[in-house]
Image (cartoon, rainbow, N blue to C red):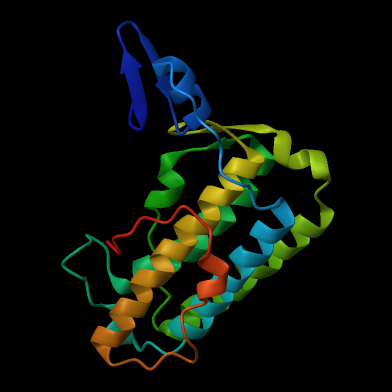
Length: 201
């Protein structure tokens, strides 16, 4: 197997995040949880990004330079990553692929303070909004070649939404450590029902 996640049984294996195929491989019954619609996921993703944009704008250069012990990336790079991983969804849907290298990108050198990152976030939100407005219902059935295995557009959107939400939770923790006062609380409604891990890190 090229990478995890994967499940192997004897000489058979399932690669990628595919619970239905895992269940079939193991011969167990599995009932998928209720799915949020693509429109609901898009709205939740925008709520997460709006919160991240407002929060990040309050960090100064020194606070963004901090590298938390839990991750090998600065707060600046984490903040940038929240928006880049979300933009990667549109890039993946347009190109039919999502390489891991897109997630390894760091904030550009001229992103000096939180305002710079927040302005990038506004551009990302604008592009996402335009894409979702133009996407047909069948767009989300398309399969994308993701670095950890094939995923439908809908499944990738769900993963993108909770991925961004997980990093937003981390940014709130880092804001508290840095003495940055958020403009509002963590948008719990946007995260409710998503398959977020219990641990923040």
